[in-house]
Every structure is written in structure tokens, then in C-alpha cells.
Length: 472
Image (cartoon, rainbow, N blue to C red; front, side):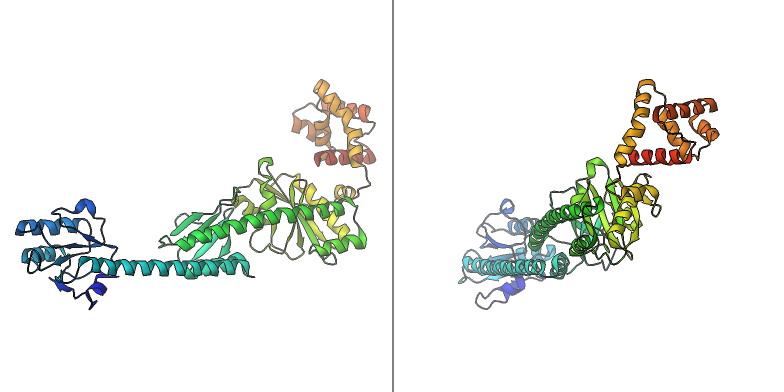
């Protein structure tokens, strides 16, 4: 209830005194006092009622007005007919000077009637607010549980608040309307109010609300709903990726092949009659838990995701978002990530080839690594019946043991010799060795392994052993 509404109530018969304009904000309370200095008992935004029992002199009346005005009170209601027959002129004059409205309360109107009128209005307003809040709760819950999910909830919340709303996780916007004004919520200079969303993850999840923003109870409820939904999504994402990981592992290892593999993959949303490629995401060991729950960026919703050997394996259709976009997203999420990208092929065997291409590409160590299409190593690794680990161990173990015992650097010399196309001069320059030292080490390799890197067939054998060992 505003002061204008209070004064216009015919049942009370109140009348304005003086020239001060009544404020438009609602009255927060009614205080009755006969103290000369009521300041310790006032909070502001209330109507102060008095009969002026102790305000006999003009000086006291003026001082009373100034003290009431200091507290931020909205008006003075002066009861006449008990101590004063009319509202004192000095009180009205002082009130006009400070801009504080004064009104006359007839003798027959008890102060309690005014207090009750304001209290009833406050109670009705509070009840209406609760009704609106409960209705808002129902609208938000219904939006979330419907087909629209989080975007629908944020749309309803934006409508209720009359401003833009966006949800961010891992540094990227995952839902909410694009801003109509100002910069994006990711900009530190943008006029956005940010509220944390608790998910139990180190995901920097925030609800961004465009300024100007004043706290609204419906936002608290929205935070709770979003927190529960994102926590459920993370749990479901983990379970789905683990289940998909078992399927991908079976296909990659060759234990699931042919029509059965195609049918199982189709059940996971992968149509192997079409070309697909594999992208493998690896992160620092301390960040791998994030791969279980990390949402994919915008545009990647239709991509199948699986967890294999603590790495995130994505199966993409031939026409798919650029891996470079994924790399930028992972960097923005605060992850130290490497991405290996395989070629695109049809049929389950093609998926296996693409997987091993992507895995081999990861060893290059860059943020984004594109594989050589159908490399010899990838083809051999895609065959589960090829004993590559045994080959590597049988070939390299003698060299590694000799290096540990003598610090001879045979494995390093052999690797650089193969990488530099068999040029002894290039190896000597690269390792800062004499050429005869390089020749001597290569002869030791021949003696310990029985394979001569100068012979083409032996060179291929040694190359594969080193590649397999580097891939783990």
C-alpha cells in the first residue's frame, strides 16, 4: 500500500497537510510514538503516527520532523483532538522544508486502524507473492521435465525475470537465450550477474542473468532445479559412456565383428553403412575424471561418446563439426588436452582402422593431431590376432637392458636412425656424436637383436617394434 492509497481510503478519513508530495513506494510498516526522538526505533520506509503529546513548543515540533526525516520515514500522521486541536503549523512548515509528507488523523480514528490497514495490505501482498512463487515453481519444473529440458526452463525463467538468462559450464554456454544486449556472459566486462550452480564437479557452472538484476526467490528455486538436472545428466553421461566404451572396445579388439557388430553399433546410434571417423581425446592424468561427465560443445550433440582406457572416444559422421572447435572448447574448459583424429570409413572394420589411426596420431603430442590415412602401424594394430606387444618386447628388451646397464643409448640411436631415413651423418649431428660412434651403436643393435637396420625387412621390423612400444 502506498501513501496515496492510504490517504484515499474513505473509511479512515485522513487528509494531507502541507505541500510535500507523497512518495510512490509501498509503506513497509506503521510506527506509533510519543517520543521527542524516535530515531532508535525506526528503520525507514514507515509511517510515523503521533499525537504530539511532548511536542508543545515549535522548536520541539521542528526537531521531531528533522529526526523522523533522518531515518528515511515516509510520512508523519498527526492525531488531532487529544493534545492538539489541529496539526501544528511549525511542524507542517518544517516538513515542507525537508519534503516529508504530513497528514491529519481525525480524533475518532484510532492509530490501530491505520496499522491494521497497512498490515492487511502487506499480508495480502506477501500471500500473493507466495502464490506467484509456487506457480513459478510449477512452471519451471514442468518446463524442465518436458521435452524442452534445460533450455525450456531457462526460457521460462528469462520470461519471469524480463531479462536474458544463460547457463555456462566448463567456460562455455550450454543453454539459454543468446544475449540481446551487451557482450556475451563469458566476457568479464559484460553487465551480467553470475550465480554459482553446485554440481559436485570442478566445472565452473554458473547461471548468468543480465543486469539490472534484483534478487528474486524464483531464481533460488531455478538454481536448485538446474543443480539437480546437471548432476543427473553427469551421472547418466558417465554410465552411457562406459557402456559405449565396452562396445567400442569389443569392436576395436575384433571380438565383435560383421553383422553383429553393425547391429550393436546401430543400437548405439552409429550407422556403419555410412562413413564415420574416430576422435580420441586424452587429457592430463589428474583431469581424466572430467572426461566421464564433460558435456560436448554446441553442434556435437549427435556424436557418440565412449570411455576407452580413460580416454574419450568420439565417433563422428563424415560430415561433422571440426575437431579444431573441440580443441578450443577443451582449452576453454581448462583441460590440458590432446586430440587424435582418424580417417572416415564405413563398416565396423573401418571404425577399427580409424580408432588406431587416431591413437597413433595422439603420439605426436600436439593439441590437435591428424593421422596418416591407413598407416602400416594402424593396420597391424587393428588386428587383435597380431602379437605386436610380443614383437616389441622380443626385439627391444635386449637393447633396453643393455642401455640400463651401460648407458649406451642404443634405443635412442636406433629411433633417430629410422626417423632420419638411415642417415648416419644426420644421426651423428642430431645426437652430437661421432659418426663412428653411431656405426658402433648400430652394430651393437645387430648383435643384440639379430636385426640389421640397414636391411629393408629388418628395418620394418625394428620400426614397428618402436612404434608399438611408443603406443603402449
